[in-house]
Amino acid sequence: MATLPDGALMQRAAAGLAAVCARILRGADNASPGMDWRGGGQVTRPARGGPYGARVVLLVGSGDNGGDALWAGARLARRGARVDAVVLRHDRVHESGLSAFLDAGGRVLSDDDGPLTPAAEQAVRKADIVLDGILGIGGKGGLRDDAAYLAALASADAGLVIAVDLPSGIDADTGETPGAHVRADVTVTFGTHKVGLLIDPAAEAAGHIELVDIGLGPYLPRPAVEMLEHGDVAARIPVPGRHADKYRRGVLGMLAGSTRYRGAALLSVGGAVHGGAGMVRYAGPREVSAMVLERWPEAVTAPDVEHTDRVQAWAVGSGLGDDRGDEAEAALASGLPVLVDADGLRHLPAELTCPALLTPHAGELARMLDVDRGDVEARRLHHAREAARRWGATVLLKGSTTLVVSPDGRVRVNSTGTPALATAGSGDVLAGLGGALLAAGLDPLDAGSVAAHIHGVAGQVAAGTAGQPAASDVLDAVPGAMVSLVAAHDLL
Image (cartoon, rainbow, N blue to C red; front, side):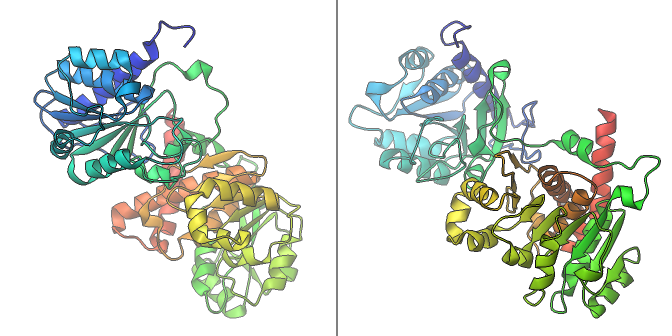
């Protein structure tokens, strides 16, 4: 800000915000150079042919987000939109933004007594677009009563709700939603993605995300959270060299499945085979081993961990049941890199001394930390960090926004999650993928990040062919997902 004329960043932000609103009002494809991390979702309503005649309402708070909304509203008014503002605090409104808004023909519907006038409520209900400029990145603790009422009214009755930088009331730094908050259809964020836009539960309130570049790039610090794109993942997928053999590609020991959960063995072994393992050595009951060999004849079987040798990493726990704890503990004590999933998480030592990737869902992480599941879901980043510190391991917390958190504090969020993965056995496929990548030599952070990304792409592919895919459909889509990622990378 010190290198630019006063207000220059706000003008850049307002111009980008107004441009997104105009594009949506035209009904055009709203994909933009700014990344929609949710996978290209499009917002094409309400289509009016452009801003002229559109009804736009601004919810204006006291900070710079309110100023952004007012300046953007002025631009839309000059293009023929009917723009009204509901100002929450008249004594703290952004003065230059308000002056520009009024000069452009905008109207203020609130007064000094408060924002909830009959005219304001009627305008919100009839709006084509409501711009949420109530709170910015400094807002904490959720929305107060009047703002919360307006946010709920906009979500229930208005056309599209577009958040300015981030939905008001979410925590920008953690992804938590500590109170009432705006639920946006579109979020137009400025300069860089905020942590809260990428991590649930706040991410769910952000909708489609549009990034407006306002020139902050050279000044940004090291990111608190990373998100791998397709090219990043493709560059990390191990590619065998010309002199590779099965041992150089990685031998994975697989302790999974049981007489009760036989399918878990098939899915996790399949995930490892398709994940590039040079060999999978499966340890399990004779009848389960027979099923594994029938489906995956390239696998090698043994009755238990003790008779499984020459492995370079272990994947432990998928469908293991309750009666093989000694074997799980033996694999965890081997000193080899290990992925621990599902029932294997019940047998964790106080601290892991080997490279480890733990893959719980929210319920399993709640049990590990002795907290309520609801608290884990409300504070996903906090609890994933706590588990990573406690066990000295990388934690992959599964969910609609999968988090991968290393014990040194690095955090990655997966961009390819899809409801198609919400099916029994899907986590077993992921465990096999992650285990194969550990055996190939990736560290736990990369193994978890790459596995989650590939898993998500496979889920998207499976959904395109099977509608509501089963875990077997996701597994079958893994090879094609990996080929498409590598091919796209080769074209860059």
